[in-house]
Image (cartoon, rainbow, N blue to C red):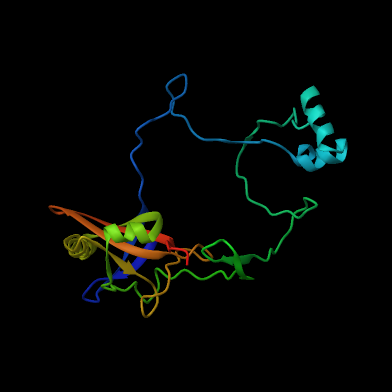
Length: 232
């Protein structure tokens, strides 16, 4: 659960929590003995049995196809289907050898999908829990307009950690609920920088939404990394 330093309309700021929003499961899967089902990773294939190795062993694709029909050269009988634990992602080169110190390149495309430029990917530092709080911008956008302009990929719920921050966040949610709008928020001194929650993670535009029900509140931070535009 990441922390976030945020300010309100009166320029008061506080460090609070931001947690993922989970939907209630409508369907729950169980096993034959009513035990809860869980997802497991299994070994699907090995380097010694992938397409490159089959091409080296059999040559043309037609020959590979005949081998697949007559036998199972793509299956490692001893290891296929094994459960995997504590796995890590690694990068390999064209010779399927491990590589280290990978230089990542960021590809920028226009609205037609054409590559505009390539540049080295820079791992930006997190900026949501610094001495500079996320500012209350006051820039509102109607919800009906926001869902037509932006692609929202995730959302976080801003939650209080004590009584003081409850009052602080409840006031923010009340103001936003009355406006029936989302409010744009950003990081940095001017509140215009994208939000970065972890070093090197995807930068997002943030939009705050508030809802209240009596003395209960919900303060949601909607995240977007894409704006919808009509091609020129």
